[in-house]
Image (tube, rainbow, N blue to C red):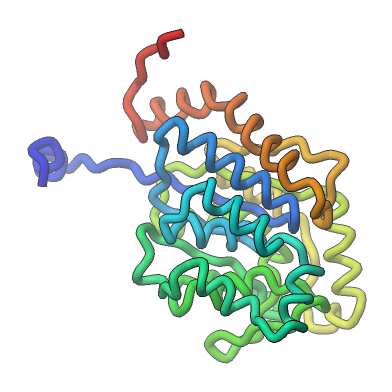
Length: 277
């Protein structure tokens, strides 16, 4: 233990934990990777991460120690943000879970570098389920199982589907994981909400899941709320990998001075000197 850490512990001071809440949004999840890249460049590391739907996939990779560059390569190679591509993988004899397990090194939650939660919805009760144990890849699959495109994933005897239905930007889950300060990233828009409602109308409404606006909750539980301008793109804009990644990156970079000031004010990081031009 370093001397500074020893005295901090001795006098009751502890480093405040920074959480990252990654929202749902299908193919627009590429923007999340751009956001993470911006934080990497500032050497800002998150202590906990939670995600819904595609946010759980990106979050699980982050908690597995995978860099933004590697994430982008994986999503491009396997089209992980595209439901149609994932269906084709299944038809070819592959399973999404096996693919995600390969990417995350077959890790269980207790093998991750930081605390992580994948948010899903119980299709029978409509309850939010915050997954924090078991296989990371299976939790990712449950959190991103969009009905009726994908069948519910059974974990602990519960049939789970896409977490975006119950918690679009899971900042509250970051709090449960111990985060003192949370940065939320929202990708949701009317196109996602309409698509989700249509999916429920096709046979899932009777199961008690009611699509509600959870973005407001995410905003209220976040200390800083990033909303990349993805107007013109949808959750199925699979041909716009690079543009959406760049939008996420530039959005975070543009807000970085404000974010750093907030983190300094909340004593998450120390005040930084001005960068040399």
